[in-house]
Length: 164
Image (cartoon, rainbow, N blue to C red; front, side):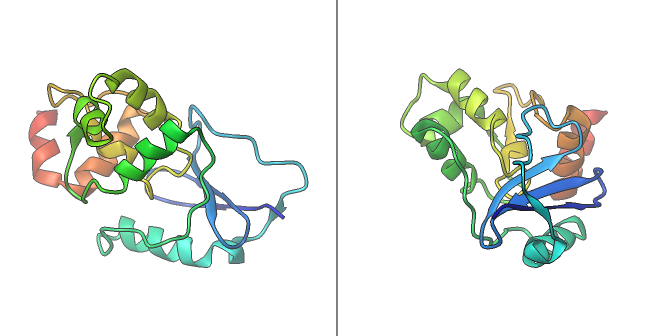
């Protein structure tokens, strides 16, 4: 059985999708690569009580790492990229090239960017922490304003200076 709910956040409504045990999707309104909610899925906020609690703590500045069971479907390469995203610490950013090096594919920064964009569990799997090699904010399935918000939440001084 697939469950879903919508949760309000400072960056707009978030749609959470899962099976009652693991989170399989977390999408922002107008997310570029949002998967459709499967037919027969049931709306049930209680299935996401822990995810909702942790998201509230994150947006409240009280949580720096999510501890949630995840069930993310993708290719082997995509899953390798998504696992590497989980190793990027709160307040840290890395370039697409650095992320490619971290997974042992130094020439695959473009493919890493594509896999990063297909991350089905944004925020929890912090794809927003990947930036351009020049330090610029590039690409984000949820939109650049949301990416900037999330990075400002995690590293206010760093990205406030870049915005000036």
